[in-house]
Image (cartoon, rainbow, N blue to C red; front, top):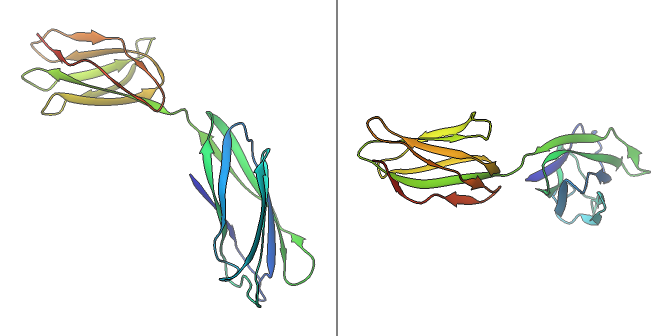
Length: 194
């Protein structure tokens, strides 16, 4: 994902510079591609320290008399989930109107990183549409779909072991036991319902 940090309620005289100290849990997410967004003019001076060990510092100042005079995006960065869980990214801004840096209220966002789902695909041959149902190990339904006009189906579910049943009125059911891997596609062998 891409995260963007904004400065809002910029005073009438504008800000000549800003510094942001951002922290996050580096076991859950990876931060990269920290880039200035142009709020401090076309030739802003930028310094980035990190990201490393769960933090980074982004500093920006206008040059040649340019400064931030209107609310807007200061910088953006890429966020990559490394494992499932929650992570809070907090950026503590300090701004200057021409003198010493003054702290503003920190901004935080909490992201929920979900485990990537796996996809189950396959083809079921029958002379009518087939219902394909994916069951969890406790026999609850994880998902269901109907085959398209060519007998193809696709279902997504969290990584794990499942039972899949293909059924159509007037046909015997077919059953399989696929294991789905997060972020990957598992393709079942083509089957024909009798």
